[in-house]
Image 1 (cartoon, rainbow, N blue to C red):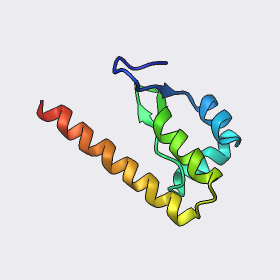
Image 2: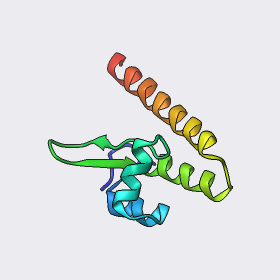
Image 3: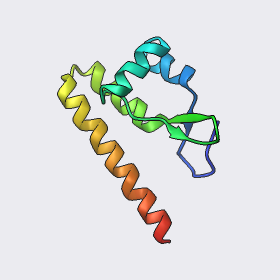
Length: 91
């Protein structure tokens, strides 16, 4: 599923599983632990994940970053997402 903004792709959980190489329950555990970015609500009962955010975390994991470093990356991603939302609301 793609968003209308160029370069922004929103992925279903199955794609996240494929990129990260973990089962659905492990993906959710990592999200709870702050080791993967939170889902983005796209409907009443549907969520997706930012491909850029997931890819950045996958690269960090592959580079051997510690859990604390990955958590920091995810916190920065969430902060950037919040800033962007504020910008869009103000526009």
